[in-house]
Image (cartoon, rainbow, N blue to C red; front, side, top):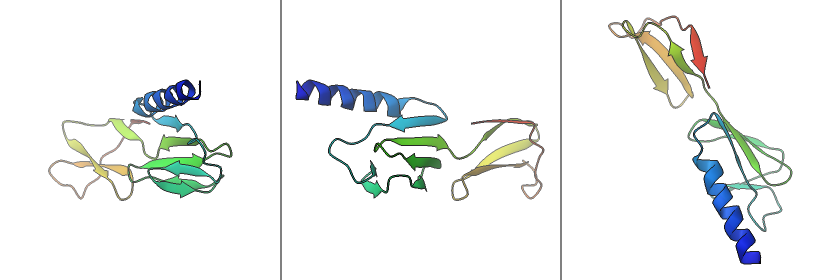
Length: 112
């Protein structure tokens, strides 16, 4: 019975983490009672952290983790004249002119 429950939890965890959305949740690791385990690192319950992939995450009291994309993706701007460039260090997009990257373009809508 315990093996079936473990298999279900693992399958559900894989399903949750492969969803392509702005937010996702991770189930608690079995046996972990001192916080949340994310990619081999232990976070204190109630703490917030940012991942290398630009997600803002919260370690919940039950050991689960809730993460949401830390940036918006520009979708409405002059695509003929401008280009969106992602700054991974700052976790944000800059929309700049293709011919002169020192000039920023106006963004009318973002998602995420």
